[in-house]
Length: 376
Ligand code: MG
Image (cartoon, rainbow, N blue to C red):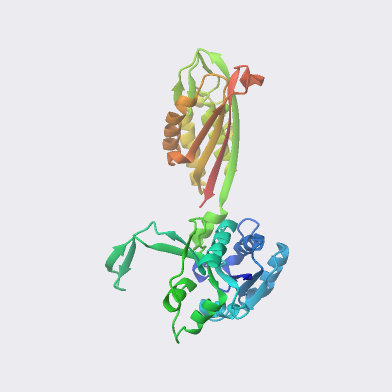
């Protein structure tokens, strides 16, 4: 039997917990809203025949405009008082043989792959509930702030989409008793029809709920920094605050730590705070011979004071000689400590320049760095 596949995306919520005073699905995430992101992913899944969006009367026009803007075709159903009612209204538009996927519009980081796996599960097993094993221990309380028991084994965090054969889900809906409320379809189905099958979800498939969730989604700033220093015999070679054995070092007003300079400029660029030349001029005797790690400490303070927090740095060191691979681990440890991040947030690669150009002729070392900052 060929089944038509319908996605029902619930967008009727008011999003009170996000506290924007308007539907959180219309919050600007840097040029795109969660609504557009979410509907966009579903509209790219070729297997899906129809998208039905539940929404409130207030948002109907703007949602229609947004769909036109991203070239997505969708039908709209006005939501009811509760989520159960809204989905029920949309279900009435489907045929009993259809596959229906119910999805929460606030899970806008959903991927095409998860949706396709969910569809396959419904076609094979009759159901497909996207969920991930719980990494937290789940506590059951007495309802008065005291824990009765805790458990993690066999516990899952349930996400969406949740897929069913429409007729079966309609049957479950018809059995809901007066005053009975379900937070999602999987619980309803388990109670009245049978135990639905789990499909592997992803931690990325997060539901945007609180204002903090939106901070993470929108406020990432990328920075880039480049530096080059020439070699001079008789100087120490310092990279990332570590002395590297070599027959010459880099020339500069400070200790000429080209790697740390690249990282500092990336951070200052991401936060639009100028560059290291402005903050630590090489005409100032105060900085003569200074350890660049000291300057890095200053940059971290400056950046933090401006409301940014470092997420990660990534640098490539371009050097024909010496071979640096065996020092990378120690350098990462040292920089992570100075930057106040975990080691896995400091990535460093090394390359020669195949004997070409200034670096290739062993006249110096160059560094290209990137970083991401989160604006708090
Ligand atoms: Mg420099």
